[in-house]
Length: 191
Length: 218
Image (cartoon, rainbow over all chains, first blue to last red; front, side, top):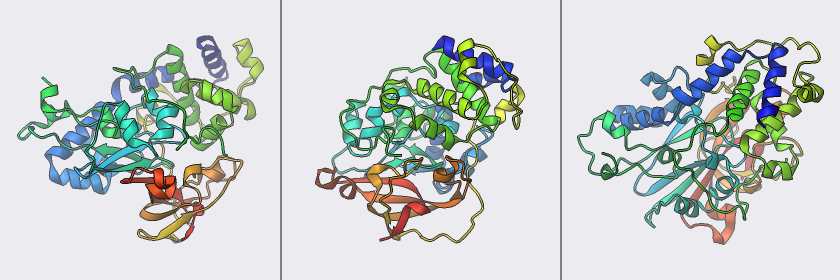
């Protein structure tokens, strides 16, 4: 594949369609700038600031843009809130739709057949693959990203974090907790 | 199309295998390929649904056996050839054998910061929305041989409109070059039992994002 893609890049560059410097910049952006650390800051802010949380659940595109962490947010970013009685999980059964602007590029498992096939009919089984067990009385809601709307889960704030700074709370927010295949870390799991 | 890409509810694919500390890309060619795709998208040669449709049309055995970015690469080759932008002879030769076509624009490094997020697919409405939150709807029992975003598991099922998401480019037409034909988009919520029968997890609810032409009143 290395040779095949090199040939593709050479042909497209020689034809004047692409500029290798722009390719370098795209790679750099996705490897160093865009990623789940952005989503983690959004979640920590929502845990700390009730008015931001309301704004986020009302219109996540607008609320995230106002935070100034990214210079653009795609149309219709939607934040969905986990509660003791409801657990949300995000999937794209048809391809790999994922909220790039707040989570970066999706992990391989998110794009894999096991996840895409089972999330919609066996979400508890999927959670078990991640080592997560929900209380039996928690309902499960799965969001299949079949259009250009994108979803981010607002996980539950762990107990025992009262008085924590936003910065410290960020360390509890995992990528998987924002997809709904994980929960936020417990205070004892971070130093 | 009723292809293997439409995986919701299929059995037999096994467990989900998360990788600890997964890197953004696993191979150098994945980096280059991803960037090439984004740069060519910026140049306006294809839209996201055309790229998806190209990947969906890969032979099923190729689709299932190929890594994610390998599918992207194969989809790109197919589209470049179909659009007359780069021939398979050139990819085999590893160099351009003919001059390039003139494209809408070319991505520069300076522009990248403004292009790393998704484009906008919202469009002005052409008519009032047919449904409102709370309405019961039935998804149509359609089986187009071309691109659609109505998954098989959610066809001919009764659900409730939960939210209206605005008017958006219609994937089913834009993917086959028949224009954006903007349509209202709804979040439609289904009970697990409606989708999976008695074997459904009792508390399960699943929603899809459904374009108005997929729906009729229930």
